[in-house]
Amino acid sequence: MTFGPLIALSTMAGRIAAVILGCAILVGSLIASGRLYSRSFFHGFMVSAGIFLSFDMILFHWVFRLHRITGGPEADVIEPILVLVGVGFVVYGLRHEPRAPKSRS
Image (tube, rainbow, N blue to C red):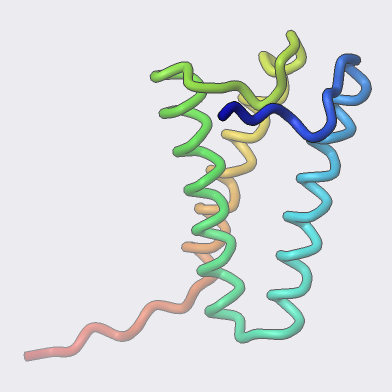
């Protein structure tokens, strides 16, 4: 049994629109988590999303070449941007999360 895409996007505009939709869902999830949950949850969500964006892109897209973000040449531009955004999420989430005071023993 083989599975193919539900919707085949054959144009660059269609592939970029699909990436924009994914980014919009991520941003909506970030906004919802920031409004509905604690700041710690929001920062943790940002860090986890950033690690996923960066780690997945570098390891599975670039090192193992298992798949690309899109099937066209636009992936060469989109993927590095998403890695930088992911690193930015990690840095922001870690820097803005208050650290527990160190106990003196």
